Image (cartoon, one colour):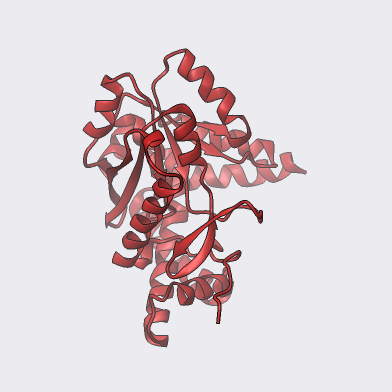
Length: 293
């Protein structure tokens, strides 16, 4: 069945990836009312998340953020698919790094780095980071159950010089990279909800206590790797720029959880600047602690 689904869907994805951007955005404009009004894709989750964030003071503001987000979500889905049909030149013209020298300085020191990023703006195009720096990009991910789509995603990312590492094998594979002196930049999608666990670290995110992944910080301390944050900004439709900020040059010198908390505060400020581009469909607050009366 997995094979059948793949061979039915993959040709459509390849076809869409070869369409020009002007046509993709025309299609996105038509897709928005279907996703928002007809299919009502995850509307309850999105609305709950926006309300819990406290960014909307009234129903009018809530609907404005919600509708702007869904318009952008349609763009984002199509931009993700488009990756396969983009050349290196086109990707570099549409996704720029404002300060690649901060990464290159670590490369000159013979150091790999970890980069934390939220699901904000076109986080998927960060896979093109290798076009801008000499470090080899990797992303930590959970392999898909459908091995055909899993291989498809790996192939698409490799077209722009980025590779995937299963989160279950990261320590083994990164240890091998360190021994081989392979310099890399490892991307952590660092704003998802972890599984329910009594040992989870909780912090305040939009005035709500939520559990968070601390893997980037923990592994940064274990391997003594600098930790940075990628802040993606949408310049205009189809164009983005990313600024890299330092969180910890030597994580072993920073108190536990401080790096993670600094990252989340920076992400919260970024979302407050323009909530349209945050991935509100992800149920960020599902395991939050109830406030004491």
